[in-house]
Length: 257
DNA sequence: GACGATGTTGGCAC
DNA sequence: GGTGCCAACATCGT
Image (cartoon, rainbow, N blue to C red; front, side, top):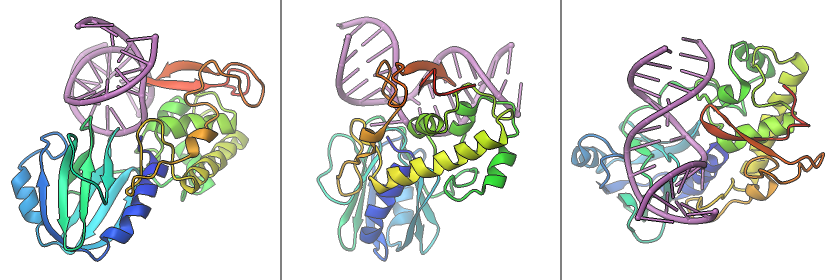
């Protein structure tokens, strides 16, 4: 579910509810989502004020009056500002006004009082010059796009969609991309992510924002999830292969190595 | 019921 | 340094 556009949408919908609020108490129930001592984490959060909510890559960062709470949604994490705790609710924050719930069936997400790990630049901020410099690596372009130390925020959906939009084969060598193709990819990433944010992200199965609203960018997908369906540009069936252990969708005619 | 795949990431071996 | 394989977990489709 949650790649940069989804996380950005969650941040935008949750920020008005959290900014300036105080955490009265917190409760954590998953040893996977919150490794370590859960009650001491809860104790350290009690009484803290939320000063700012922002996104860094796929991480949600709550800046507190003391420290910062970092949240990664993993594959199926949801941050919700309303509703009742359910079977997969693994964190409950009681605020001075309202509540914040963290739901995550697969429990691949993480919540910690720790800074986010070292990440590459933001894809919507990096200059073409810096982007091209970072491409000078001996790796397949799709694998590089998924690498969060290369760029922070792209995941499987937006890597495939960006490569489709740029007409670049997922197995193409990053270092060997021409200047023109690198520029096309840089632009494609910006356009795809911007449009996805404008549509509230992609809801493939169960992604929703902090207010429970689905996104709509999935109706604009041209590669991801379209195996066997005709390419919107040339009609050739979209193919699916495995790259870096991830399902990878592309048009064999429009996307050249 | 079994099996494989799913939006993520990290560790390991080579 | 890059890649393949496996791991965590729950759910869903075949």
